[in-house]
Image (tube, rainbow, N blue to C red; front, side, top):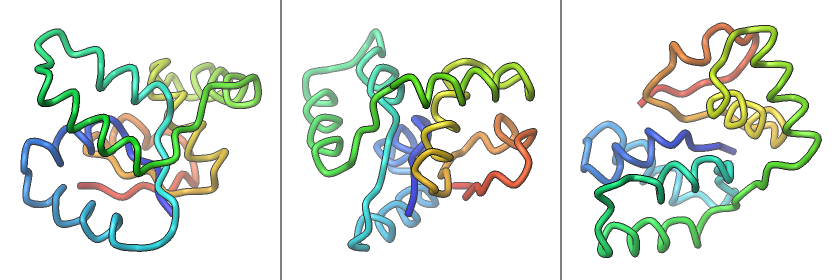
Length: 123
């Protein structure tokens, strides 16, 4: 099972071969794929987002399990931020992956490498 970092989705939509290959394989499996609600904020928050891109994002998100930021994830994210210096959005995404017991798929591995025993898959 996997959680997707925002940048993994962005590179997928941009047609990056590595991202497309890995994510297409993940999407073909029958296990759930998660994103944090922070990823949803980041994806829909791009200033130059077109209506077509918005529909693409919406279509993809409807196939994923969106994990909302609740108190448990917020506290875990706060711990990750405090202990490992992870930026707030990244700490929430990492906490979501930890909470769901999944591997995080990301292009920015170095943003998460400080977290010990945190399973990452680089695209």
